[in-house]
Length: 285
Image (cartoon, rainbow, N blue to C red; front, top):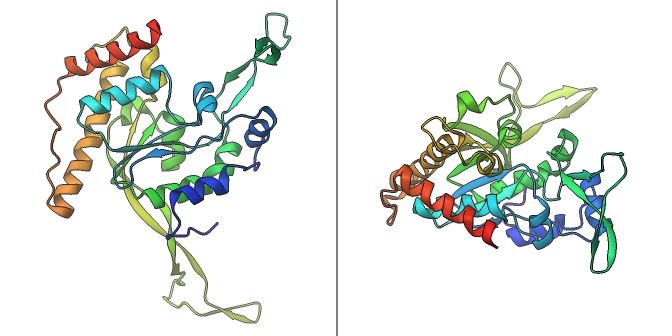
């Protein structure tokens, strides 16, 4: 699928809002759920998770709920107010939940009994079906830095196995298909070649390089927030987000001479405090 460099993000989202390329889209249509597009600011830090959860599906926006609130609170305390949030897949990946007897569970919603689903990580086929949308979204957003949230997102974006115990917060370049095409040269440097009696000039999609920072998914961070020690998942998550913000700021300064304001000097204790406050807010709601 070619990328239209002139296309507004809203048009891209409308094109995919009725997608049924995989069973996730078929289920979304059958249950009347929301397609979940990315939201935020272009040319900033772009954070990519694996897929929307139940709360996101209900409201049609990514990273809502407790873990999303924790992520947003931390980014705000780091002084980053303009960023973009999206997922590998734009429909919820889930399966019917069963009881101890293996029977499908149901609950009453608006006087009607409906199946209960539990979230599951999207499988490679679902990710592949949605990849053209994600590639075009990345190109149109044109982020300064991409942050992979969780191993599934990191592996899909880098094309290799990612070990977050080793790779967390390590900035590196990645390539995403762009809008233009380049000549495919032979080993001898020729472009024109004869194939089955026909002269051809093959071309391939160009590649656009982005800064990439891998880290944990906010949901994985939320689950272990009781541990905020130096080597905890929470602290490693903070390290990666700091790296992303610093990489973003370094790009702006180097490319445009801009020195972002209001970054502040948030300590690890400050970030722990705002994360705990945000988590408590959802517990009390």
